[in-house]
Image 1 (cartoon, rainbow, N blue to C red):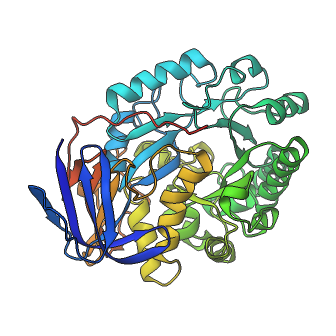
Image 2 (image 1 turned 180 degrees about the vertical axis):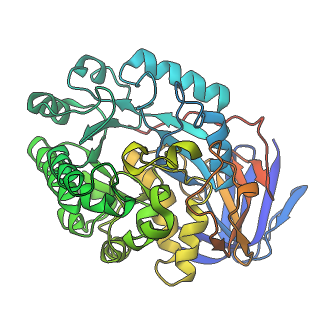
Length: 445
C-alpha cells in the first residue's frame, strides 16, 4: 500500500487551523496532527510549504445533465471540473432526461457514475405526485435524499398535490431535499411584468419575478410540513435573509430541519444583473445586497447549515437568448471553493466556517460514511490550496463542457494545486487524471 506524507501545511479541520501534517496509507488517512511530523518518513513526501490543507469538498447539489442533456454537460466532464475545484464528492439531482423518478432509472444513473465519474458520487431520487411506490423502495445507505420540487419544475416533477406531499413528508425513508418557490406568486409577478414590457423583460427583473415572497411562502410551507410529520427536511439554495428566520441555531447534529446556501447567492447580488445578465440567472434568483449579507451572517450564526453550488450548466447559445427564452442555472463546481476563499480574504467569512459548511456539514447532515473530515481511518479525500496565487478566470482555463463561467473576468488570489481522492492525486497543478474513477458515496444510516 502506497504511503504519502503531506507536511508543513496550514491544516484547517474541525474548527482548528494551524501548521500540520497528514500521513496517507493507501486509500485512507493513517494519521494526522499539528506541528512537525516526527514519525517514519515514507518514500513519497509532499512539502506543502504552508499551503492550505483541508478535507475535500462535498457538494450536495449538482446537475451534471446525464442522461439526456449531454450537449450541455455530462458526468465525466463536470466531475473533472469538480475535482479541479477541490470537490471530491458530489450528489447529483434527478431532473435529467429521463427524470430519475424510478429505482430502475436510479440504478442506471449509478452505472453511469461508476463508468465515468472522476469524483465520488451519489444520485438523488426525484419525487412526483404519483411515485410513492418507488420512494418506499429507496435504500438509505445508497441514496442521499429525495428531491422534491415545491415550485416550478420541468416535466412532471412539480409536486403540488396535498395528498402527495403528506405521503412524502410522512413516509420518505431518506432526507427530503426541497426546491422552494411558490409557483402562483411567480406566475402573478411574471404576468405583471409581461403586461408592462411584453416579451422584452430585462434579466434585472428576475429577482422581482421569482421574488423573495415566493421563496419565503414556499419555504415556510415546507418547514410547516416537516414539523407536522416530524420529517427530515433539507431546504436547498436559500436566497433571502428572511428565510433564515425559519431555521434554528442549534448544532447541526441535533437538527431535522436544515438548509443550504449556494455560492452564487453569497458572491453576487441584484446589482450584478446589469453587467452579468442571464449569466447569473438562477432559480431561486440572486436577491439584494442585504440578502447576500444576511446569508453570510447566517454562516457565522449557525442558521446556514451547508454551502454548495447548484451547478447547473447550459450552453452559451442558451444563455445568450432573451430573458424569457433563457434557462436558469450556471456552472460553478470549478470555482466554488476559490470564490469562498476570496470571501475569506475580504473578511466576509472565516476559513473554519468554509471548511465546516462545505466539507464537514454535508457529511454530518447526510451521514456520509468516512468522508468530510481529516481523521485517521477516513478516506484520504484532501485538497491543497496555494493561498498566494493570483489568476483570472478566462475561457482557456474553464473546464466545464459548456465553456463559460459566471466568474469569467474575475481575479482570484488562491489556486487549488492538489486534489486527493482515496489517497490518489487526481488533480495536480492544472492536470486532472481523467482515467481515475471515484466511488459511490455510502451513507451511515
